[in-house]
Image (cartoon, rainbow, N blue to C red):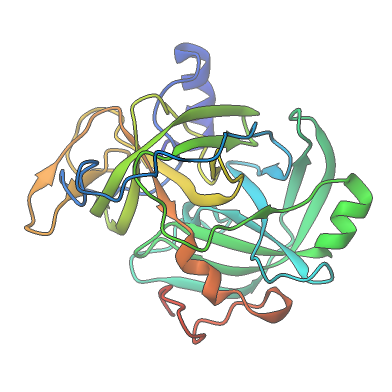
Length: 293
């Protein structure tokens, strides 16, 4: 995960902006998972990249996030904000813990394309949150997608429904820092272990994405489609093995690899089937593989 924000702010001042990502977890792991060579490769005939902006991203008190929607969302559905499980105001969920339908009055600063705050959005509840197998949170807002668009002229970011591919050009857009990081998907990690937590099929960035504390929860956007393919969550800060802020990679054979300075994200395509009518989270829906309470 990355340092909590107080540490992140100092790190940014001292390092300028290139360090570990998130604010929480500690996946340990080993090299493998799926190497860049073994992972699916992006097609050579990829569409021309679109300019990724801050429109639709949000700033939390300690993290980043984004207003997101599934492809089937209706304009009148309550809007959802995506961030990390370790960014929840209640603290890090323990291994095996899943938070569902918990009241929340958390607020989010909505950003426009240039990164300026244009309004404040408010949650009605934590629709879902966990750090088991993945590291994500979904807040249901008091505003609908249409109300946000009518008030601020900003549309939600659409969630990709397919597994991403290695070699895809991506942008991590941090609403907290109002900063973007551009790189490629290097590959996928079978298990990413950090402290007490383990995440599955994590996205590994190429070295150019040197995210820092406070970028936790940032949407990872496919440059070609503009869709969200993952949520930024951690990085190995000091070369330690499977400790807090030093996740390690573990392959199918249990071999561990440590990649100091490399950062990671959790895929989001697998949560789309869990978002039902009216933005309600249905963990029993067909195709939904998110951990249950």
